[in-house]
Length: 311
Image 1: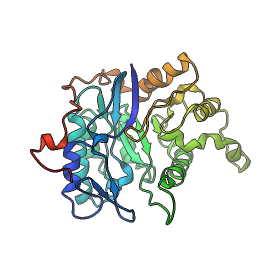
Image 2: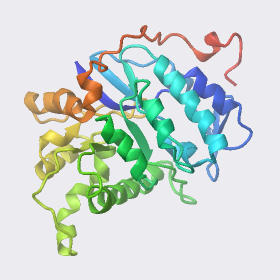
Image 3: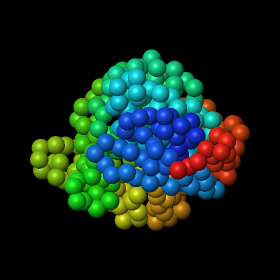
Image 4: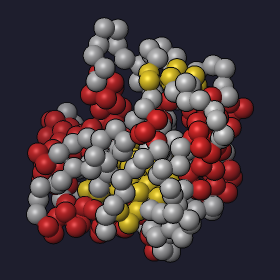
């Protein structure tokens, strides 16, 4: 049974909160409206049907590119609370990353949320890590998950532009900022970077050429997850960092978990052993095996809320 550290699933509570808003980010039926971006038609099936066969645990997270964490607190928290309530109500095999408001960080509120059973904290790559929040994680032996944040498409650019350009740039910046500025202040914090940190670790030769250092020294508590990459990229990262800091992530429903293509032992490490080490106390306490009632993937938003139309 595998662990997937990176999925997204919009629950009825979160959908209702987005639909209740009158300004972006909001949902109009199933049309997602964001500042500076064209309307996006969400596929309801992406958030109602999910094949979790073979998974011991699937960690869902807030969709940070929506910009929710950067809204004023009075707008941010109702959406985050709705996400939290829905995520905690999911049954096997789901768990969840907590989210928090970055326009007015509240370490006490984060502590209370984590103590409800979240696996750790997700932050957007565009949010400067707040030392007070990171201390809350370290005290609980829970990890940080760094995910791409908001990225408006360039005028005239193809639809894949945000995922291939700003997301990757954000992850590069977050990776190097963590090593240069955050790790010295938080030596015991475990952290995982989405999408193989945008392949930032492969730029170590250029880092050294420009006056940096650290090549050949692998931080065993800094992980990268595999979403939207495949065997060639995973192999290159393993050659640079070793296999022990690579963990399985899919970014479902937008992608599927890749086959590392490195043999059975490496696959087991990436999908089972390494994620357990990343999750620390969450894994050790058995919360990798949720005991809530199983999630019914056939239960739609409309079924839960009477005859409300999806459109």
